[in-house]
View 1 (tube, rainbow, N blue to C red):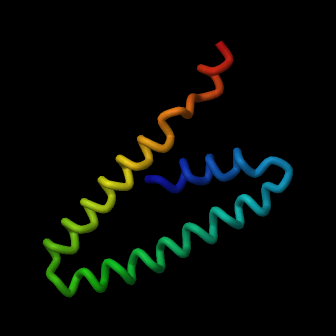
View 2 (view 1 turned 180 degrees about the vertical axis):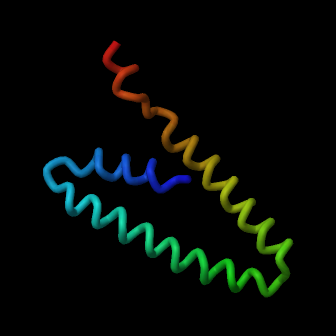
Length: 81
């Protein structure tokens, strides 16, 4: 669910170097796939409920952090008014 939004953010920041921006996007995406699977697999040793609860807690904390960090961001169509 976050991939299209992340791609939009990265490409809007790309400017004159969109290839480098998409490279960053793909690098981050695949590092996340690899590390996320590895960490989830290790936490899964504690049991499925513990692993899923840990995943949900981490996702909730990251969502709260993103709301705090991006609170000042406003869409272009709102800023143009």
